[in-house]
Length: 218
Ligand SMILES: C[S@@+](CC[C@H](N)C(=O)[O-])C[C@H]1O[C@@H](n2cnc3c(N)ncnc32)[C@H](O)[C@@H]1O
Image 1 (tube, rainbow, N blue to C red):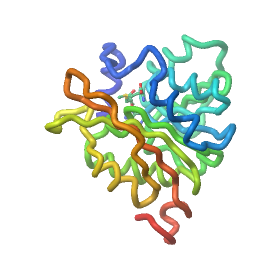
Image 2 (cartoon, rainbow, N blue to C red):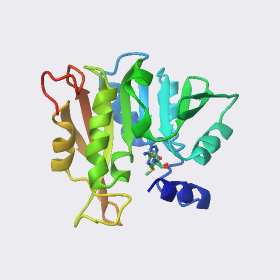
Image 3 (spheres, rainbow, N blue to C red):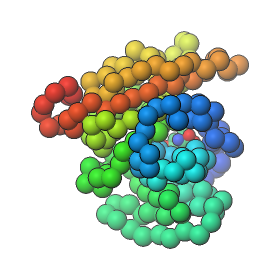
């Protein structure tokens, strides 16, 4: 699957990319109660302009993206940047935005020490069912108790097995994140002509960290 994403970027098959920030981010983020200046993790970030919006709102941003082409395109559209390596990741920095090039599942808690929030638009729904389970657990491991996030998911009726994007119904969102996050449904978008419909969720990480054997969690 990772090669498939690299090919998509190389061939410009990136219909998911938006030319302006997502209206649900602009509408809901200010009301989520995210701590001022909290660093925001953006998993599977592509070259999303939402990261520039978050940075302009005063949040340092840490995006993780498999395709270096996506990161290069994002950086080319901004100002000065620097580049360095940490473990498995090549990292680009531009202002308060860091873009880590590599596999989200290889990004570990020690590297995530200063994260305080997250933003998922088209990350969960880019992954097949078995990987979504892994994704929700990994995100929980990276987020400290109390961390808040915004999730924008997608559904289509009838569901479609041949993603991405994958249809992830409300029940699945609750089942995936419920054990480690307080999950609140914020709104559903209008159905699009192609049958897809967006749903917006607020998530708050319950404490303590996943995998430490206490409280709610796996
Ligand atoms: C549907 S796109 C969404 C991008 C971005 N969130 C947006 O809203 O435009 C999914 C992105 O995830 C990247 N990706 C897929 N699997 C990944 C992984 N395991 N680790 C990091 N990035 C990944 C792909 O290269 C692609 O750019």
